[in-house]
Image (tube, rainbow, N blue to C red; front, top):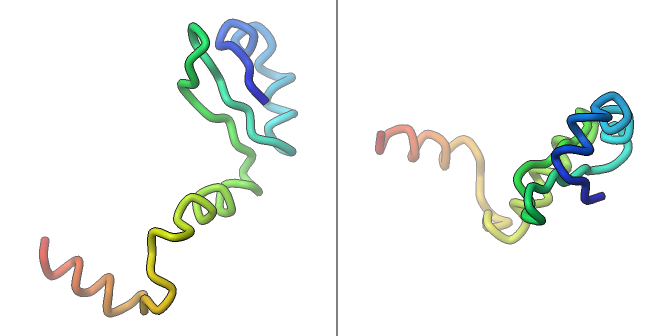
Length: 71
């Protein structure tokens, strides 16, 4: 759902309730500037964005250790 920032500001409680079931994209001057996402949807929201970026055969622990060693 797209909603302008003034509408969200004036009816925050309404959009807070709606965010528990769906993603709210907040716009300013017609451009998306923020997302309001319910807590139960946060994990899937983030992991859905990673699909295709992380190779499927990646093993988490060695990859993390390697990354930390480079810092």
